[in-house]
Length: 506
Image (cartoon, rainbow, N blue to C red; front, side, top):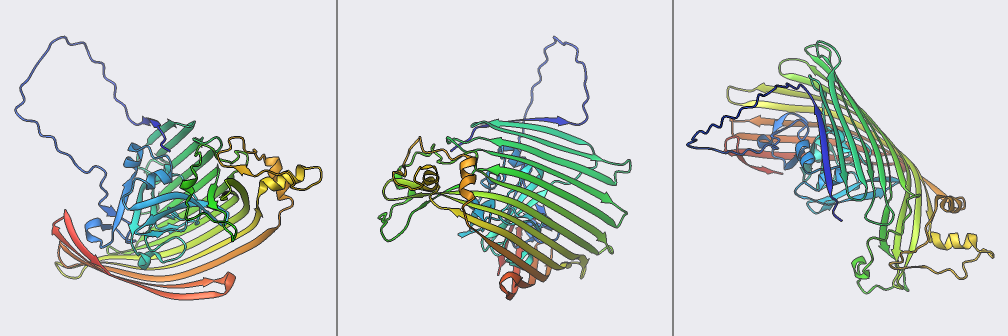
């Protein structure tokens, strides 16, 4: 369903007011020629994260796309899902669930992700199956194809590629912006972006991004509400050392409803799909009182130290915690024209910690040959705990609890397109949960990696990249270990200098 959005922004800066006197004199002038030229005003020609070191797009033998914040604002993209839908080669962007979390899944190059789109932030990991708000994004980078050489192949990186969120940085001058967006289905969004120096020498900078979002639905039930707060700080200690601190808080509640087909030996659909049932899409069969909720806390720190004119040390830290209270609703369609509603109640907690140390070198081998090298180590731990309670056929259970003889005799399943399907209140849901048996699950993943990448420019048009990564993955929860090597070789030649390049990669 399409949504109509209208956005208004108020900018704060330096204003100069001038009073103009009324001039009734009409003047005209003949102009011989007018030349109108256009530029790619949204083109991002350099990235610090795709190759884990500053590298121009025409020097990097990696396919990637950058979506800047200006284009997101122009297209009124109010969430990460609508932002990713603007990117070429990114398909089937949808809300996905797992282990009590709610995240975004997508498909790139024929491979589907595991509900972790956007879980990488400035090249560092956050929790999988967790959502985020785009209010603090400077750009979105989509790295396409196998990229395990520099980023591994764990939960957050798929065969088709991955999504990296690039966040806004504090500015050396004051900037303030307040935005309001309204749309169909009672959609309202308020955003704030304020950046300011905190001292006269402008060595201590701060920036605050925040958003409040409240959305309805085209269906009879279904709504979402979220709050995002993302402060960031930058401190220049001296000419060699600067430190950046970032925090993210995201609180969201929303309906999570999914459809499926009941299967079994006595059930046949004759190759039908859900579209063949002609369901009224405006009927949700859901409840606004029973939603999935998540609270997400992310902390980031980066220290950049200039060792010499040719070498830089970059130390990064990421800590992510997600607290979920999931209530997944599954609508199972039968071949008898009825719907069975199943609820999955999954409280869970995700914790991730990553420490990364990179050394980046940039020096000349000869007068014409230059060399950029990256050497790094990375240690990441992911721990999750959840307990799962399944309420199968909740309508039958509620009917049985309310009946005088505590049986389901006389129970009538919900028919397709029934606008008067029983509404499930929070009180009735909690009463059923009291009798539900829960099962607990734990994960404990640890990954240690070492990687190196070298980019040599033989001329101002010919570039070669060689990269190698070693990963040691340890699943403590099920006593599983795996070692893997990820090599990459690439060659770039600029056919038209700084305009067009050809590259190959293996």
